Image 1 (tube, one colour):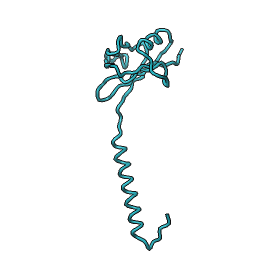
Image 2 (image 1 turned 90 degrees about the horizontal axis):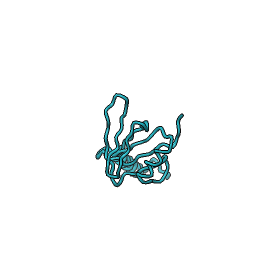
Image 3 (image 1 turned 30 degrees about the vertical axis):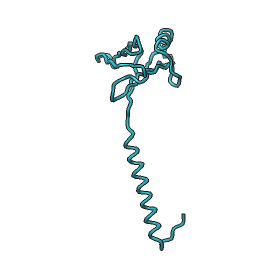
Image 4 (image 1 turned 120 degrees about the vertical axis):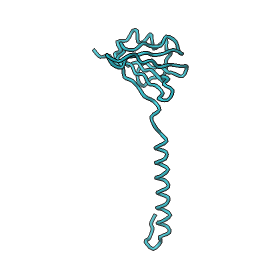
Length: 125
């Protein structure tokens, strides 16, 4: 658009529109926040759930107590980072035969329910 200095109404309208758009962007940005947190854990410190409505237990450090988080029917299990979901039984089987050293446990910050568990496919020797 080509606005001339002699048309102050056009500048005012444009300036107001830009301010409105920027304020909406700010409101939208503040509406989004962290809803999920995750742990990167040594596989040996994690006890996987035995059934889909169970719990996952782990130690965050050598001197820390156990942390217990619930899993439910919405929790997904993955063998590798960018993979489709597998069943809990398949995850437990994969963990038994792989030389995995890391596992990732992600949970909802509000409900403290695990959203997904990801078994690392990287082998660190």
